[in-house]
Image (cartoon, rainbow, N blue to C red; front, side):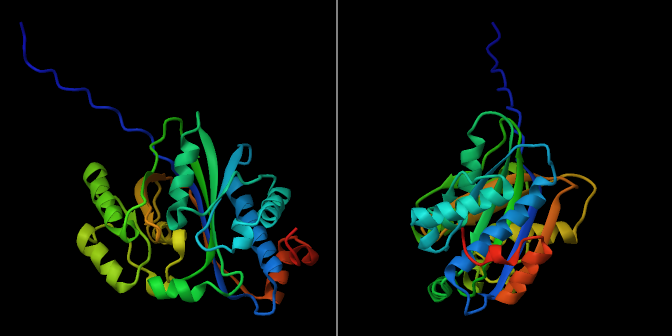
Length: 311
């Protein structure tokens, strides 16, 4: 009798989520000018989300898209008051035709990974738009975040993701102590062992944190820390890095990358993606004084009266 052990079959790798679009709009302070009101700012945020959704959907106009909103620091008026949250979602739905499935704040900067994991657990292939929306609507949150993590930035980022059936989903974990920083870095190292050192994008961090991260995971294929230029832009940081990398290193072929984030409340996420040659990219500044926002809205075909209040 042959007693030699039979090698175990190697399981095929699951397909990766595919990034069809990554669009980031940096909010330039003061957002709408110091005289603008919180409802006006909410309306402008919703309108910019809609504009980005239109760009994402243009990549596959015939497809059905789901949409999830993520945030770290949006006002409790939007995250905790049902009437304002409903008005924000209704405005997005009325302009884009897509009502957000959720507004996710609990996981902070790591929220996009949890949103993707939730969507990927549904049956079948699908397309998912994730909007990361962080703005200081009341000009009241900046100082607390600056004390915790140094310079910060605000913006709106929308991702267009294609999830094949059975796609590999993000690794998510927490809550852990110390902002899940150590657990996040160990997850990055484990990913490099499993998939090789593909281009990797992590949050933009002040020098102390960034130095620890670089020493622990190495700098090979790690996108440079852009904290000095952008500040810490919450969950958008790794996506800004991906946009810059795609522009700096265009390719006619699809490539694999890894993106991750960790959160002050102790959560982290890490995910590998396929980046096709046809990825749609945008990196722009937006905001400033209210008059400029009105001109931008009118240029986009939106009557100025519609940006006066959040419906």
